[in-house]
Length: 90
Length: 196
Ligand SMILES: [Zn+2]
Image (cartoon, rainbow over all chains, first blue to last red; front, side, top):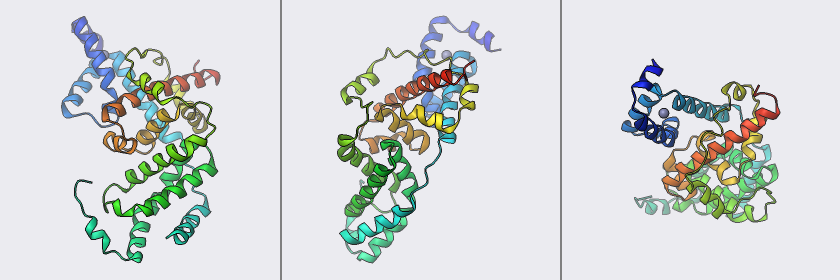
């Protein structure tokens, strides 16, 4: 089905659509796309395999950064130190 | 920021001010400390930076509008402190001249295809330390925008305010940062034998 859609698309139109898509994919991934942009991007990645793959990779990179990088625990003395400093200074 | 509610603030007693400060700002210490650590890559520096941020926040509490975006406000103070006080004395080797960084964002000839052969399976096999190492290898401006967006979940508008840059620059910097991060991840996956 994807292949059929690709064939039906005019080649020149396809390239400019892909450029537009690649430039704007982050908006979709970050939830920043307007409803028009969202409609265009979702439709395009449904029909275009290379753009879908870019989207999927970038989405995964974002998720991996968020889920895999460990949070550092706040040093136990830090809060007390801040409160001391605030009391000293003000 | 548009409305001026400072008049209300003037009537606060010190105890009331302290209570508000505690309630609105102290719960954010976790995010701030992690941001500071990801910027400085040093626990002691992160400690100092967070302390300084809270002291400044207290001093400028009158210009903070209660109930607005406390997290973005504190992140902005922390980022400015980092630039003004820490970056100067930091020994970070990969420091990139700002001018050079901006010309990166503005060039359209960035090769989009370089990173397309990074496999999702390789990414998923990586452990947190490896992903962190790849992120830490980016120049600080690129690292920062990924932290703000992907780790902390700020919107583009919030990032524009925190970083004092237009939204268009947020977008292009983020785009460039992600491409660079994919290159680092791919190089890492290669050396670790993930990309077979
Ligand atoms: Zn496409």
